[in-house]
Length: 408
Ligand SMILES: *[C@@H]1O[C@H](CO)[C@@H](O)[C@H](O)[C@H]1NC(C)=O
Ligand SMILES: *[C@@H]1O[C@H](CO)[C@@H](O)[C@H](O)[C@H]1NC(C)=O
Ligand SMILES: *[C@@H]1O[C@H](CO)[C@@H](O)[C@H](O)[C@H]1NC(C)=O
Ligand SMILES: *[C@@H]1O[C@H](CO)[C@@H](O)[C@H](O)[C@H]1NC(C)=O
Ligand SMILES: *[C@@H]1O[C@H](CO)[C@@H](O)[C@H](O)[C@H]1NC(C)=O
Ligand SMILES: *[C@@H]1O[C@H](CO)[C@@H](O)[C@H](O)[C@H]1NC(C)=O
Ligand SMILES: *[C@@H]1O[C@H](CO)[C@@H](O)[C@H](O)[C@H]1NC(C)=O
Ligand SMILES: *[C@@H]1O[C@H](CO)[C@@H](O)[C@H](O)[C@H]1NC(C)=O
Ligand SMILES: *[C@@H]1O[C@H](CO)[C@@H](O)[C@H](O)[C@H]1NC(C)=O
Image (cartoon, rainbow, N blue to C red):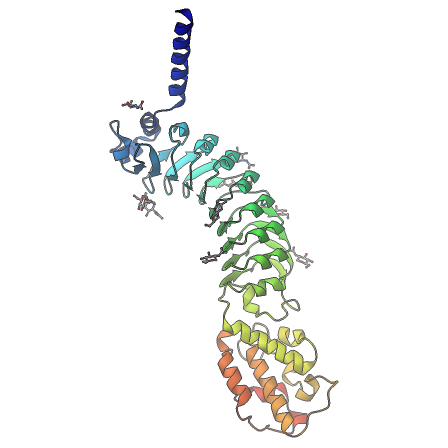
């Protein structure tokens, strides 16, 4: 008798232990509701009884276990600390954006082992992002923007290989961007804008092959733009403005073919002489389009004619809205074409002079700072194949200024 009684007793204790571990999801939600501010409780008026699967904002699986909690824009005021996350082992989506939730993000959030979506944006959360976020191995979308979170990004974020979108913008986060982000191979949107991050942009950012949007603007980042950025073949948006980045803009930026929005302004990046063949507007918000190729064509054409990179001519033309406008320094306006072209070559004669002059004219038009005024590539090729206008005066006397009045 005695042994079987002991076994029964043991089973009883085990059972009691197990059920005390299995926190009741209904009770957990009702307790949270009771701890929210009074007005928030009226917003959750459907939250009564013992079947949470029928309550507003809640979705369950077939077994009656909660999978989604979505209370966007419900005016909820209170903290998350009375919400026992142990009660939701099957929760996949937690969406609480645009409320007035405050206090810290509880570290117990790491118990939501099935979580894929965590939206806490546009609330009043403060304090650190708990490192327990690293326990959310299935997390794909993480949005915490528009809170008052501070401290640094936990390096554990690098464990979350399923992450596709991370938006931590508009907080008070600081510290360095952890190099562990290099592990996030599926990351497509990464937004850390309007925070206080400092230090270097880690080279590991170049490992994020799926990245399509990278926004690190309005921080305190310093040092160069990492050259590894050339690996981001899918990048369509790159915002690095309002930081303390220095050095020259790497040519690699010009190689990003998917890029449609780029803003590197308000940094300490050097443009003149380093831009090489890239249109100047690439340093500001703009569309990378055919007009950039036209600009590059202008640089290459001028380089061939002059026998050297036309960086000094370009800086004389920069920020001007017309080919050779009146503000261009007189030494450039009155520059003789014969002095501009490569002095190692024979002085052109006869029909060649017409070709040289019109090609200089064409390159100038392509080099205009305002992309709107540049010709299209089609117009360029038409100009190259059509009849050239005769020179207004003998070749040895033609200046840049003389060419500007001419048609292409
Ligand atoms: C959870 O708590 C509710 C309300 O107290 C109760 O009706 C329900 O039976 C409990 N469910 C379980 C599985 O214990
Ligand atoms: C979440 O709730 C809001 C407001 O009720 C609704 O507009 C939105 O579509 C819901 N989102 C999801 C993913 O269920
Ligand atoms: C945020 O919630 C308020 C109501 O609390 C609503 O009026 C507003 O449109 C919401 N904003 C967004 C961006 O959803
Ligand atoms: C973060 O904010 C909390 C609460 O506002 C404050 O106590 C803490 O000192 C801050 N930490 C840092 C690193 O700024
Ligand atoms: C990354 O995305 C691919 C394609 O969507 C998916 O097959 C893979 O499992 C994802 N990797 C991780 C670690 O989630
Ligand atoms: C952000 O942090 C700074 C200190 O780094 C502090 O002075 C400021 O009050 C914080 N702002 C908010 C909105 O928490
Ligand atoms: C590149 O971006 C497009 C959409 O912007 C997406 O469909 C595609 O899957 C991305 N490729 C990679 C390798 O992430
Ligand atoms: C930005 O960093 C510089 C040092 O590089 C530091 O002196 C300055 O206080 C920082 N500014 C902010 C707003 O954190
Ligand atoms: C900008 O960079 C130049 C050198 O490239 C340096 O001399 C200057 O001090 C920097 N300015 C600021 C505000 O950091």
